[in-house]
Image 1 (cartoon, rainbow, N blue to C red):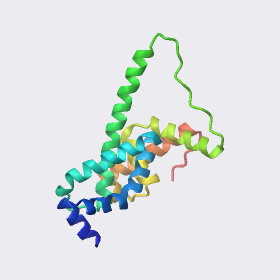
Image 2 (tube, helix red, strand yellow):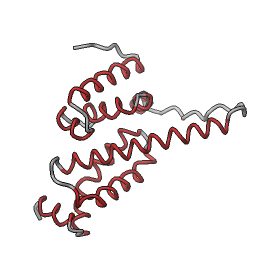
Image 3 (cartoon, rainbow, N blue to C red):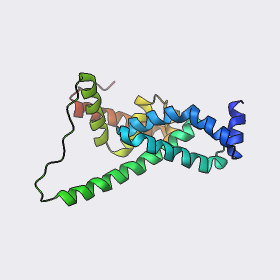
Image 4 (cartoon, rainbow, N blue to C red):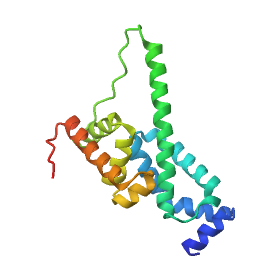
Length: 182
């Protein structure tokens, strides 16, 4: 089946067509989710949520954007919700542990330098404001051009450009890398 035919069938509720879309895009969505969260343990659940949302709304997909861009937007929204829930959970934990004198559990040191660098990057990404992080991930990690990132994030191109550059500046500062304004 051609991709347009698969999409039309999926919009008509064809489970096999939906399964084909899932198989075609699940790895891409999983990579995006992992890059945005840095939390491997949450990826499967978030990918499921993305596709549940997508298939619930696929009948309203008009084709103004590519299917991959539409799925990226859904994933970004799901990750935003995840960030919010993580913040609320951390606040509850901080309140619960206040006054106990316990330090937060430290993550173990990675055995390999590459793993350490990746962990530093994801920690630094996690410290970025959400909007800067999602623009940076879309452009620098997912490789979207400005137009694609603008469509996926629902903001003007100039906003994506600014947020990406600002995220780069903050990441460089956090990682101790000199910032070179080109």
